[in-house]
Image (cartoon, rainbow, N blue to C red):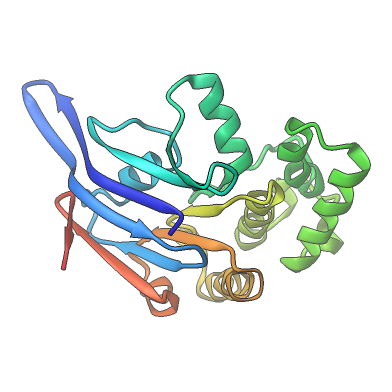
Length: 227
């Protein structure tokens, strides 16, 4: 197990209305999982991923991640500077909207997180090219996002997510903006990375193609996990 979620609750206050986005969620994730978190819009899927990625904080409950160096579970850091560094070094993100930096090439987008880690330019460039080759885009390494299709941009985003060698990757509706062929190609790549390299993937999705590929499906409804 690498993630332990205990009694996780998130409440948003919208005027006089209280919205319970997550309601006492308990969930364990093992290393190497290829898991889809599914449910209707407003069920809490994205909120759960944001909590796991440290992009939002819970109202109550805990998220703990396995630390091999400490040989125990540790909570996500609470101090903002520590949390930023933790996310950079341990968690890969693949967003629905790609979120690539438009003025950087595909290679530079992938290398960016490694530059932040202080990795040498030579090493970060070599790894960026190797990752782009893994997602079938080494020949587009010097193209900026505007020159790439939506499916190609999402593949660059996957390569970027892998750059820091994260413990797990969070993918929020990664196929939502892709046509059928591009979605299948992207899922082929992520499934291969999961099987060949043991990379843990957690998806939030309502896409049947992702659910079909997932080896575990977690159903959320009204912020609760449904058995």
